[in-house]
Length: 85
Image (cartoon, rainbow, N blue to C red; front, top):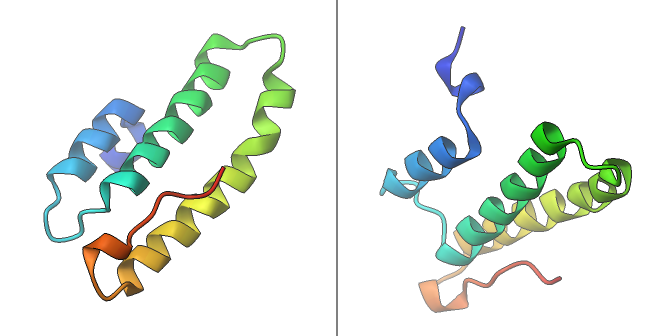
């Protein structure tokens, strides 16, 4: 199998930060980190409010994708912004 499938969120973020050619803007990387943190808390911590905590993740994932797409099409790095919350 693909070893990427078994990476922790921390390992994924480390690899993402090391990829210079495809580096995401810092604001997007921070949002990915927040998303992964909440996802892993739900997955491994199994909190009693897990179902309620899952609901915002889909919207957050969409915001991350939109912010990444906007950053890729921005003419300069200063136009890169984090997703709105």
